[in-house]
Length: 277
Length: 303
Image 1: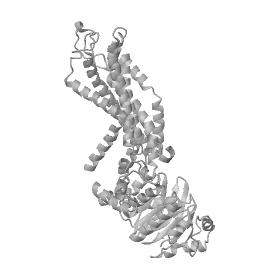
Image 2: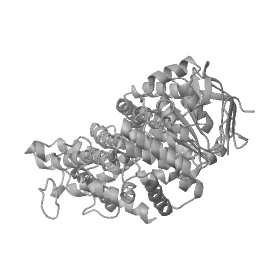
Image 3: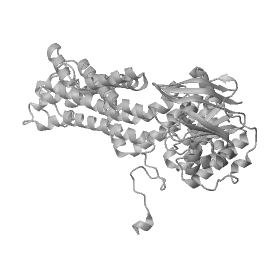
Image 4: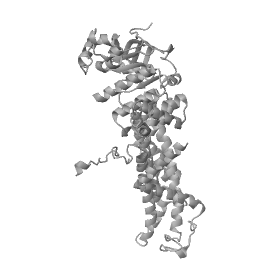
């Protein structure tokens, strides 16, 4: 169950926004894509799922379990989305449909992929809500997104992405829109869920401090190119590129200085970085 | 299945809970039922001329009195409601088909198509449909079909104009992307996430369009460009009775009231429907999460 991205190129019109990005995520590995706004992190994530916006086209290779995802028909990709690969977006305000209850949205992917009935999906949604530590899961599944807090919405979005127990979770800046305490809770939650299920994780962020808490390896992007790929501890202690040095300076918390980085509790297989062969 | 029916009832309950929704619903149901009943039964034959019974005041057996040729006004109104319902529903259906297809073409297709549809809609919206309807009627004689088609097309374009940008906005929401990321096909996604979020805007436009259709039929018929004189119509009745307004003012009241109430009810019903179907607008009883725009009651501040 590994993901291999090789020489990924994304064009929007005439403009090349992602240019030759390569990285690999072996089974159970946690890899971070880090870079400033506009460096092509999010587009890379969307390209993996074949969800690029209109007018953007991807070339190169994205192999999931040996299957080539680029150029795969949408019908076939849809069977993977939510089932084998889940995604959590940045903005919890807009990631949930405002006029459907939280429970129905959590239960959506199990209804699609496992063919559960409405009633069964509801029961499953309650269980999933409990799993992401939403308070009072029985009642919260009947609520609408505007009736719960931002952190709870992000928990619901995570429950949505994980309801089918995907093998890979892509998290696109899931904590950026939250305040610092909630951020820490959500990171903690993500890490424990990923470890419980033995999932692989692709975590996208612009914050090296956040990255150091959750990923073992980092791939640093600038203007759509990979400028550095190394274990997170190396990025923190000996940043090789100018971009990484800048990111390190900007890292929000001083708590995660080298040596204290909780990434050191990383276990599991070592991810390979650089072009997959 | 039970979940679905319960949900529908809940939604109707919310509609009933709004005073505007209740009023709109009652009036619209009364008009529709009257139209259906009038197909089988009216107190008197609405075409029955009885010169000896001219200008009878409201009473028994002519509850709303009679007109200048002794026809029963209640029966005329009942028969006229058929025309009203036919025009409102006909124009509504045409407007929906045109509006939704133009909006979908203008929001979901390739860029060149989207932009040409937007321009087309902007051009079409500049056409004064009612005046065109009058011109057509003046040349070829009035008919209900002309009224229905002109209002239907006119409001279809209006619906497209308002719904298209709304559809574009929702299309770019994260939850639509999240729906696709859950494995929904584009069509399922359209049905579950896109359309329900566009529906409130559409419902308001549609109810307004139907109200205008009722008004347009009455207005055009009043001016002699709508229903042919052989058809029962509130507008025709108003035109006929209005000639004697100084002598028999009471009789004019009935068709006028019927038109006003129907138009008002359609508008209010549309507004209430929007409120009842949008959970972010509904009046929750939860004090921590009051409806949008409501003032949160904070005892310490009040005391």
